[in-house]
Image (cartoon, rainbow, N blue to C red; front, side):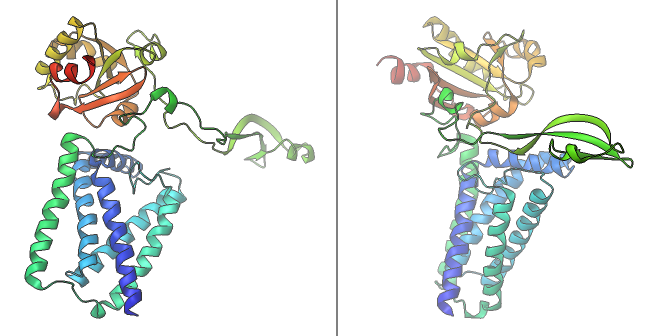
Length: 372
């Protein structure tokens, strides 16, 4: 019996640590997923708390997993784990049953799971956790109380410090399709053997005041009591999507420049500001100097944003003299977890990227990449 309890402790503890660290590696990305849930539940007013909740949940998951492994505060730990699992299971069941959210975000961009897949995992871990609650008197702490208290304090500090660091200086490990070394054009292609969308043509008829959908085979059997209403294509099975399926670069007047910019054989910079209203403008003194030095060396630099209607006001406020292009806001938030953020590319391949908190000097970038 003790072997089973120890096995459950290891499984649940490590899974919570793994899940917490994966999300803590990209707390801003997890906050975007929380925003999606708040929209689904009509709780847009909670969006202002998304980042705070993201960091707290990441830290709590990791800490509880660690406490379970060392057997610290075991009854409190197990009940907190059970409550979290009940919450996650309820959320995933609702999302899956009503088809509200397609990806649960439980393991960030590292492992993409549907709500139903994660609901199954939640239920399995919940069963193991309740078993441990029943047998909690058989679980002994690994360390004495003094050492345990020291370890808990150190773990709590690190669990909070890690997501704060990655929020301010980009994820340590980037699992997104725009990560350093990834090629954007390649990411826009479907892999060999990918499944395509399965579409079926259906006909809409009205009978007894109700509309029903009929396949071409079924309409052969209907009589004059059915009244034709419409025809449509219905998605039967959604096919695979390329890792990057919504990337485009257009000028303010609507002209398409995606291929021209991505096929640039020379080094070029993207300054990414997904929302100009939320962009940190204090750093633009340094960015403007960076732009001037780029232009002096004929290095292309453009600014990508989703806020087309704010461009002129932004230029006046920041004094930024650079070409602005528009791109989907969600795409820009995925490209780099910083607003503004800087990306260096060459022929569509991401060479490097920087958070505005660690915005580089042009001389450092030039010495590292351009003088080779």
